[in-house]
Every structure is written in C-alpha cells, then in structure tokens.
Amino acid sequence: MTRERIRLRHEQETMLMTLYLHARDAQTEHPILGDPHAGPLLERIDYDFARLEKLKGNQPLIVGRAKAIDDSVRDYLTAHPDAVVLHLGCGLDSRVLRIDPGPTVAWFDLDQEPVIDLRRRLYPPREGVTTIAASVTDPGWWADVPSGRPTLVVGEGLLMYLSADGVGAVIDAALARSDVPTQTLIFDTVAPWVRRVSGWQPNFQEADTGFLSTTADLDAAVRRHDGVELVDERSLVTLAREASSGALGAIVGAVDAVGPGHRAMVLRTYATSG
Image (cartoon, rainbow, N blue to C red; front, side):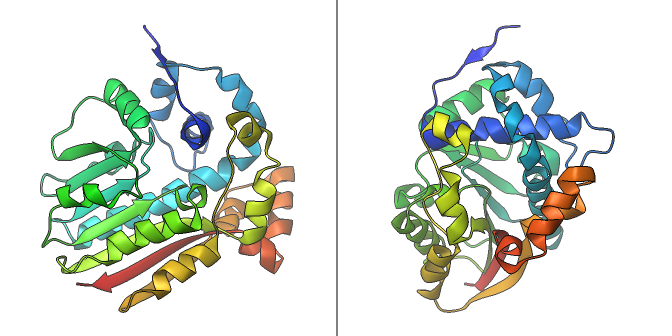
C-alpha cells in the first residue's frame, strides 16, 4: 500500500493528533467514539504517529467531544432531514461517514487547500457531499451554500486556532445570513487560561502552533447579532471525566471539580431563526 506524504503547517498538523486519538479509542475494549475509519486512514498516511503517543492523556476529551457533536448532528438531521450541514475545519475527520446522512442532506466539508487536497486523495467521492478548499474566515465561499434550508454549522477544534478577528469573521458570516429558515451553530471553545498554557504542549511547539482565541472572543462575536440564543453548553472536561478511569480519571475529576477547570473547554450550541 502506497502511503500519502503530507506537507502540513502549523495548526493543519493538529488534525493528525485528532485522527491518532480517534484510532487509539477505536482499538480499546470499550470505545467512546468507536470511529471505524480512523485506524485504516492512519495506515495510509506517511507520518511518524509515534510522536503523538504523549497525547494519549487527551484521548477521553477529544473523542468525548467528537461523540457529543456526532450525537447533536444526528438529532438535528432527525428533526431536519433536508438540512444543509457545514463542517468547518473538517480536517481528516470521518464525521460524514459516521453520520451517514440521507440523500436529502447537503453536506459540505471545508478546510484549507492542503488539507482538502489530502482529504480528496484519502476519501472517495460521496454523493451529497461537497468539499471546499478555502479559509473558514473567507466570506466568499458562503456563496456556494444553498439558501432556504435549515442549516447546521459545526466547527470542532477550530475557533481556538483563529484570532479574535477570525472568530468574528466566521460568526459574522454565519449569522448574517437571512436566507435560512433556522440555523444552529455548534462550536467548542477554551477559557483564557487554557490559551495561555497551550504553548507549553510539546506537540504544539513542534507544530509551531497554539491557541489564539477564547470563549470571551466567541461571546463578543455572538453579541453583535440579535436573535441568537445559547441553547446548550456542556463542559468537555466533565465529558472526559465521565469517560475516564483509574489515575487519569482521578486527575480529570480533580480538574473538573473546580470552576476554572470545569469551564476550561466547553461545547456550545447556538440557535437562530432566519
């Protein structure tokens, strides 16, 4: 089997960290996410994944986040089987395969050009799925999104790698649309103290990246728009605690027991009517 060589930079490389942890979870006796596609995909990429072994402590958080979002997407498509789904910063995530949306759903996977180029080499075309190579902060690509249909916007592990202005650009572009009957946005975000310590992570240092924005930046961006309701907020630290055991479970539990730790990373769902 020929392996795909990759040329990724900075935050683009973090998608391999997520893929690696999905694959590790799938190999466990009781997986949280149970992504059947991550492992085979890992084997097709020419990369030293052993470098990422030190990230294994983050596994419950990362796969717990993915499962929570998957569940929310499924619920949304049950209520809106004719929806448009925008998966922003999709990386190499197999969410569209895990969800397996029906033929009436228009699904868009969007990421930067090097990522989409790799994704197109690794994933076969799928009817109803459109891939877009663009920056999430570029408002131009929104012209390709169908109007007049319920729309779900998902950004997992995305906003924290954008500047405050970048977060504002994404939120403004999504919420400025008046041509959709209803719209839901799902994003995870981090506390300011998490942004400050993110630079200490060795794998982030090797990738020359780190977190740039926080929950405060997301709050500021949403406040600029009327008619937007925060309908759900979940602590991803709590989800990780519920999925952890042993020494790791004790550590995560201790973090979750204090306010700043509990709010370190949250998953938010916003809803608006067009």
